[in-house]
Length: 255
Picture (cartoon, rainbow, N blue to C red):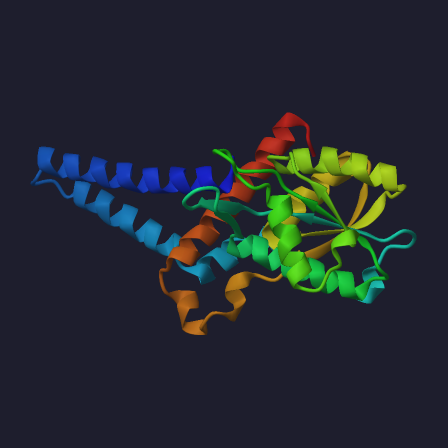
């Protein structure tokens, strides 16, 4: 399930929950049950839109990781694999268009650039295909543009531009790494995604060293941590996406 689909499912769930409560209330206006149902739906969705609650519930996904440092650089040829988190292509008049990263994707690019400066002239494999739609820009290219803006030389960036899911990224990137003669490399993704990503790449016989991107909401005003926000809801959707993804990958035998 993509993050866009997870967002659609969560919004649809809220609307259906509210609709069911309203219909129930009209059918049984004297009953307390529909009022309790509507209250529960609102409380649950408000809770999930609070970033601090998401931080607590995501601890099993994030535990055990630390900021990447020079001591973590694997031996041998240096390669960084950067996994995309989502981008959107906006079309204007004529052939004008621009592709932009979401917050999580931007945070991963920033971490990849930091890791690049820590290592000795590594390759960066920018991995991510295009979203479904007309004339969409692959995320790998959008991340490459951002990497160049952060000072990474263009000739050190390789593209993997056809993947749609994490398993695709592992399989397709594994072929690139084999061509480079590499098995151990630095894997850059978010802390929420890292556990599933590590397991998927290891299943392909690779030896990734984790480099977790900083949560892009860490820099927001601390008071917003405990207030319902759109970003908090999106964070909750990412958490749900990862828990479901881990279970699904286990069932499919991909990890």
